[in-house]
Length: 212
Ligand code: 5GP
Image (cartoon, rainbow, N blue to C red; front, side):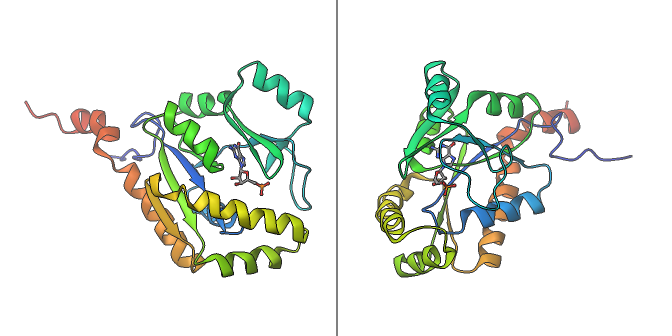
Protein backbone atom coordinates (compact mmCIF):
# COMPACT_ATOMS: atom_id res chain seq x y z
CA UNK A 1 0.00 0.00 0.00
CA UNK A 2 1.24 3.49 -0.88
CA UNK A 3 1.50 5.84 2.06
CA UNK A 4 0.24 9.36 1.65
CA UNK A 5 2.72 12.17 2.22
CA UNK A 6 2.20 14.01 5.48
CA UNK A 7 2.47 17.19 3.42
CA UNK A 8 -0.53 16.35 1.25
CA UNK A 9 -3.26 19.01 1.51
CA UNK A 10 -5.77 16.23 2.26
CA UNK A 11 -3.82 15.31 5.40
CA UNK A 12 -3.34 18.63 7.13
CA UNK A 13 -3.84 22.39 6.92
CA UNK A 14 -1.08 24.53 5.46
CA UNK A 15 1.36 26.39 7.71
CA UNK A 16 2.19 30.07 7.38
CA UNK A 17 5.89 30.71 8.06
CA UNK A 18 6.72 34.39 8.58
CA UNK A 19 10.41 35.25 8.30
CA UNK A 20 12.04 38.57 9.24
CA UNK A 21 15.63 39.74 9.43
CA UNK A 22 17.63 42.92 9.06
CA UNK A 23 18.77 43.28 5.45
CA UNK A 24 22.14 41.61 5.00
CA UNK A 25 21.43 38.84 7.53
CA UNK A 26 21.08 36.36 4.67
CA UNK A 27 17.34 35.85 4.82
CA UNK A 28 16.79 35.78 1.05
CA UNK A 29 19.60 33.25 0.47
CA UNK A 30 18.38 31.08 3.34
CA UNK A 31 14.79 31.16 2.12
CA UNK A 32 15.93 30.29 -1.40
CA UNK A 33 17.62 27.23 0.09
CA UNK A 34 14.36 26.25 1.78
CA UNK A 35 12.43 26.50 -1.51
CA UNK A 36 15.04 24.20 -3.11
CA UNK A 37 14.90 21.74 -0.25
CA UNK A 38 11.11 21.77 0.12
CA UNK A 39 9.71 22.13 -3.42
CA UNK A 40 6.13 22.05 -2.11
CA UNK A 41 6.78 25.14 0.05
CA UNK A 42 5.20 28.16 -1.61
CA UNK A 43 6.70 31.64 -1.73
CA UNK A 44 4.52 34.63 -1.02
CA UNK A 45 5.25 37.32 -3.60
CA UNK A 46 4.76 40.77 -2.03
CA UNK A 47 3.82 44.04 -3.67
CA UNK A 48 6.31 46.89 -3.48
CA UNK A 49 6.85 50.44 -4.71
CA UNK A 50 10.66 49.97 -4.57
CA UNK A 51 12.42 50.02 -7.95
CA UNK A 52 13.48 46.67 -9.39
CA UNK A 53 17.12 45.75 -8.61
CA UNK A 54 19.30 44.11 -11.20
CA UNK A 55 18.70 40.37 -11.31
CA UNK A 56 15.15 40.70 -9.97
CA UNK A 57 12.05 39.74 -11.92
CA UNK A 58 8.62 41.32 -11.73
CA UNK A 59 6.07 38.78 -10.47
CA UNK A 60 8.83 36.51 -9.10
CA UNK A 61 10.75 38.54 -6.50
CA UNK A 62 7.98 41.11 -6.04
CA UNK A 63 5.06 42.58 -7.89
CA UNK A 64 6.57 45.99 -8.66
CA UNK A 65 3.85 48.65 -8.67
CA UNK A 66 3.69 52.45 -8.40
CA UNK A 67 2.55 54.42 -5.35
CA UNK A 68 -0.88 55.23 -6.83
CA UNK A 69 -1.70 51.56 -7.36
CA UNK A 70 -0.33 50.68 -3.91
CA UNK A 71 -2.52 53.35 -2.27
CA UNK A 72 -5.54 52.02 -4.16
CA UNK A 73 -4.87 48.49 -2.89
CA UNK A 74 -4.55 49.80 0.69
CA UNK A 75 -7.83 51.70 0.35
CA UNK A 76 -9.56 48.62 -1.07
CA UNK A 77 -8.39 46.53 1.91
CA UNK A 78 -6.44 44.16 -0.33
CA UNK A 79 -3.46 43.83 2.04
CA UNK A 80 -3.39 41.60 5.10
CA UNK A 81 -0.44 43.72 6.20
CA UNK A 82 1.66 46.50 4.74
CA UNK A 83 4.50 48.70 5.91
CA UNK A 84 6.95 51.36 4.89
CA UNK A 85 10.49 50.00 4.88
CA UNK A 86 13.56 52.09 3.96
CA UNK A 87 11.25 54.70 2.40
CA UNK A 88 9.32 52.28 0.17
CA UNK A 89 5.98 50.54 0.65
CA UNK A 90 5.67 46.75 0.88
CA UNK A 91 2.52 44.68 1.33
CA UNK A 92 1.20 41.12 1.42
CA UNK A 93 -2.04 40.63 -0.47
CA UNK A 94 -4.84 38.85 1.36
CA UNK A 95 -5.51 36.92 -1.86
CA UNK A 96 -2.02 35.34 -1.69
CA UNK A 97 -2.73 33.88 1.76
CA UNK A 98 -6.24 32.78 0.76
CA UNK A 99 -5.00 30.95 -2.34
CA UNK A 100 -2.36 29.07 -0.35
CA UNK A 101 -4.85 28.20 2.41
CA UNK A 102 -7.40 26.94 -0.11
CA UNK A 103 -4.79 24.60 -1.59
CA UNK A 104 -3.53 23.47 1.84
CA UNK A 105 -0.03 24.70 0.94
CA UNK A 106 2.70 25.80 3.35
CA UNK A 107 3.56 29.41 2.60
CA UNK A 108 6.72 31.32 3.43
CA UNK A 109 6.44 35.06 3.86
CA UNK A 110 9.57 37.25 4.00
CA UNK A 111 8.47 40.48 5.63
CA UNK A 112 9.72 43.13 8.03
CA UNK A 113 8.92 43.28 11.75
CA UNK A 114 6.07 45.79 11.44
CA UNK A 115 4.30 43.50 8.97
CA UNK A 116 5.05 40.38 11.02
CA UNK A 117 3.47 42.06 14.04
CA UNK A 118 0.31 42.79 12.06
CA UNK A 119 0.15 39.15 10.95
CA UNK A 120 0.66 37.97 14.53
CA UNK A 121 -2.33 40.02 15.64
CA UNK A 122 -4.61 38.44 13.02
CA UNK A 123 -3.27 34.92 12.38
CA UNK A 124 -2.57 33.19 15.66
CA UNK A 125 -1.14 29.92 14.35
CA UNK A 126 1.47 31.46 12.03
CA UNK A 127 5.08 30.48 12.82
CA UNK A 128 7.48 33.40 13.29
CA UNK A 129 11.17 33.03 12.49
CA UNK A 130 13.84 35.72 12.88
CA UNK A 131 17.21 35.40 11.10
CA UNK A 132 20.09 36.94 13.05
CA UNK A 133 23.50 37.97 11.72
CA UNK A 134 26.49 36.97 13.93
CA UNK A 135 26.97 40.62 15.00
CA UNK A 136 26.63 44.22 13.76
CA UNK A 137 30.15 44.42 12.32
CA UNK A 138 29.56 41.36 10.13
CA UNK A 139 26.17 42.73 9.08
CA UNK A 140 27.75 45.98 7.87
CA UNK A 141 30.50 44.07 6.07
CA UNK A 142 27.85 41.99 4.24
CA UNK A 143 25.85 45.09 3.29
CA UNK A 144 28.95 46.78 1.85
CA UNK A 145 29.92 43.59 0.02
CA UNK A 146 26.56 43.60 -1.79
CA UNK A 147 27.65 46.73 -3.65
CA UNK A 148 24.11 47.67 -4.61
CA UNK A 149 23.44 50.50 -2.16
CA UNK A 150 24.97 53.92 -1.43
CA UNK A 151 26.66 54.82 1.91
CA UNK A 152 23.56 56.72 2.93
CA UNK A 153 21.31 53.71 2.31
CA UNK A 154 23.72 51.40 4.15
CA UNK A 155 23.72 53.76 7.17
CA UNK A 156 19.91 53.76 7.10
CA UNK A 157 19.82 49.95 6.85
CA UNK A 158 22.23 49.63 9.82
CA UNK A 159 20.06 51.90 11.93
CA UNK A 160 16.95 49.93 10.90
CA UNK A 161 18.78 46.69 11.73
CA UNK A 162 19.12 47.81 15.35
CA UNK A 163 15.38 48.55 15.52
CA UNK A 164 14.49 45.23 13.91
CA UNK A 165 16.74 43.15 16.16
CA UNK A 166 15.10 44.81 19.16
CA UNK A 167 11.88 43.03 18.02
CA UNK A 168 13.44 39.58 17.67
CA UNK A 169 12.46 38.53 21.21
CA UNK A 170 8.81 37.87 20.38
CA UNK A 171 9.47 35.56 17.41
CA UNK A 172 8.98 31.80 17.90
CA UNK A 173 12.44 30.92 16.55
CA UNK A 174 15.82 32.62 16.13
CA UNK A 175 18.04 31.31 13.35
CA UNK A 176 21.60 32.51 13.78
CA UNK A 177 23.21 32.84 10.35
CA UNK A 178 26.87 32.57 11.30
CA UNK A 179 27.39 29.89 8.70
CA UNK A 180 24.99 29.41 5.79
CA UNK A 181 24.96 25.59 5.80
CA UNK A 182 24.38 25.43 9.53
CA UNK A 183 21.69 28.11 9.42
CA UNK A 184 20.00 26.16 6.61
CA UNK A 185 19.95 23.04 8.79
CA UNK A 186 18.40 25.01 11.65
CA UNK A 187 15.76 26.48 9.36
CA UNK A 188 14.91 23.05 7.85
CA UNK A 189 14.60 21.58 11.33
CA UNK A 190 12.02 24.24 12.23
CA UNK A 191 9.96 23.50 9.10
CA UNK A 192 10.10 19.74 9.72
CA UNK A 193 9.20 20.12 13.40
CA UNK A 194 6.27 22.45 12.74
CA UNK A 195 4.90 19.94 10.22
CA UNK A 196 4.82 17.34 12.99
CA UNK A 197 2.60 19.38 15.33
CA UNK A 198 -0.09 17.14 16.79
CA UNK A 199 -2.78 19.76 16.32
CA UNK A 200 -2.11 19.70 12.55
CA UNK A 201 -2.19 15.91 12.33
CA UNK A 202 -5.04 15.17 14.70
CA UNK A 203 -7.44 14.19 11.88
CA UNK A 204 -4.77 11.99 10.30
CA UNK A 205 -4.23 10.34 13.68
CA UNK A 206 -7.88 9.51 14.19
CA UNK A 207 -8.44 8.33 10.59
CA UNK A 208 -5.33 6.19 10.37
CA UNK A 209 -5.29 4.78 13.87
CA UNK A 210 -8.92 4.35 14.84
CA UNK A 211 -9.00 2.80 18.28
CA UNK A 212 -12.45 1.69 19.36
P1 5GP B 1 14.19 44.51 0.06
O1 5GP B 1 13.83 45.83 -0.54
O2 5GP B 1 15.62 44.46 0.50
O3 5GP B 1 13.81 43.36 -0.83
O4 5GP B 1 13.31 44.33 1.36
C1 5GP B 1 13.33 45.30 2.36
C2 5GP B 1 12.51 44.84 3.55
O5 5GP B 1 11.12 44.77 3.20
C3 5GP B 1 12.89 43.47 4.06
O6 5GP B 1 12.99 43.55 5.47
C4 5GP B 1 11.72 42.62 3.66
O7 5GP B 1 11.53 41.56 4.54
C5 5GP B 1 10.58 43.61 3.75
N1 5GP B 1 9.39 43.16 3.00
C6 5GP B 1 9.34 42.51 1.82
N2 5GP B 1 8.07 42.25 1.47
C7 5GP B 1 7.30 42.72 2.47
C8 5GP B 1 5.88 42.74 2.71
O8 5GP B 1 5.07 42.26 1.93
N3 5GP B 1 5.47 43.34 3.85
C9 5GP B 1 6.32 43.87 4.75
N4 5GP B 1 5.82 44.40 5.85
N5 5GP B 1 7.66 43.88 4.57
C10 5GP B 1 8.13 43.31 3.45
